[in-house]
Image (tube, rainbow, N blue to C red):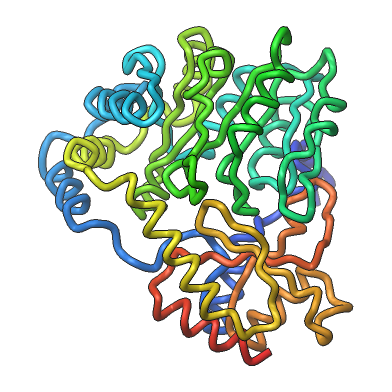
Length: 389
């Protein structure tokens, strides 16, 4: 027998396994639990958007889209961005359509960091950031958010900046916490990066789901920040089509040129008929700004249904995620958030996400993330089960 044994190369991501969203969704399916874990709506998108997609599929949209994106879609994004933030990016040179926001985030990090560069991120944070940083050979520098309300600890951010800092990654409204940046936060960031070469990667996927009176504070509102920023957003959350995986990046020409060098070798282009459908939807869309009100209502409905439970809600100013503390529930007091998430799924029929998994080194504050982007009857059924605890 040939004694040769193939040895695989050393893993680039040795600590990464199946992500928590896949794990909890599979557990929910196994136990027939209501899935408030993974962030997707259980209601359909608008009928006109589906009709536009069908029209594109039956037309001439089934071959490659241009590498940087379908021109009409980029034009509509430019107009929407100007109407919301007073900043009109050049559709040809400053907007790139990507296969979801996660691709855009990864492309930006791969394109604009070098081995040994440092990337500051605010934890808990979306789970794709750190793997992308490590794949680039850069070094993640986690800075913990304040645990009472998940606001930014600006003193800690300032202390984290060094001569090696290449990026600060920000996310507002923030997944998983539901925190949203205020104008005061923006001014703090402006002061910190002034006279530095630090770039900003701004994840604004939930830009249209912000509950603060002053609204979403996009980096694009501030020219001094926009000139050093890659801003990422997505249509999945805006139009309830998370499975379409269509996102986009807005950045000045010099950053876009580097970004596209990576994008063209990752996906090259994104599903053409879906881009055509989204372009037409944006052309006829008049209620994007009502999205915040719609989801604020869902949040309030869920909280009202949960008011007789033993769970304690934390502040939520955006996204479609509500954090709940179980620290006051005696029967769970000695369990980790991961253990409680499993118990809720297996014994009470409601799947959630433990917040500790959103840290580089898990920090367990006895907090779970619940997705309220669901039909009211779904939220009502879930709350009924949770109130029995």
